[in-house]
Image 1 (cartoon, rainbow, N blue to C red):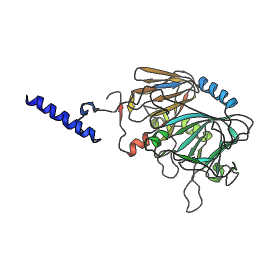
Image 2: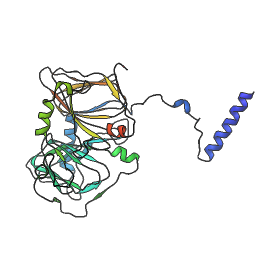
Image 3: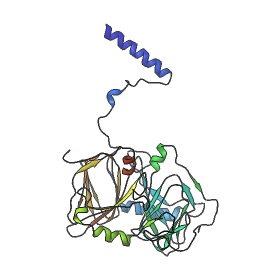
Image 4: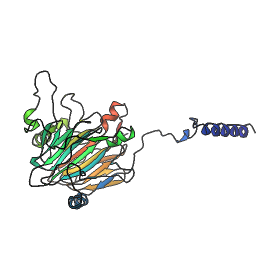
Length: 342
């Protein structure tokens, strides 16, 4: 009788609190989890399908000062609008002779170049960055930027932005540049010439907006055995030139190489990882799913999912470009990692 009376009283209390837009912490407490949960299932996007969409968009979607950006977002089927719950990955196409309107936004952005050349470039706060295949161009949040293709061939690149995080914080917004002039650079000289390596004018901070593939590939192939990761093979992080930290405070970019036949160790972590198969082919085993990728494909490995990489070729290396929200979790003290031994 006492127990029945208590339940009746508790329900009355719960109803009263709910009527005042309140809730007791005891309501649903049994549903609290003892470890992180993945935001969704692993997923793979085929390059052939993306390419088909871009080709169709090139005939239908205009790109100019007041036009759209011709980009296709990779939308995970388990969430609304993003590739993961924190990051968005897309593929963008700018045709010969086209330019994308100048704008800025609260989300930080990177461009990993798939097709380009010396006459395709992006401009970030006046700095011109030539976009060649394999280059990484970074654009810090709230920096004015636009993209121009003065070459005779398509320019195609990967976009990654921390849009999901900005949306959760209700801080995602952008604005177009007030000027209609698209060539808003302070110099026609490429930023890698104006700001080479660790050189900067006395008293000024280092500035690095582009990481050239011609420097990245030798660094990757020349890694010593003791520097290789058992989880990721030969792996390098694109680091901030000033702080020495990750690419951005909210996410970072990696490039990794798996030697012919190499298989990494099984592990999981609280960070999300978005991958692009830049060279070669391989398999990412995620929980009970095998994502068999070919060159050009894209994959997402959700947070806290057991996974490992395998290069299926016995003769050619496999190269993966990726973006991860690990820096954000590390700054918040939320990053955890486990190997297959527990």
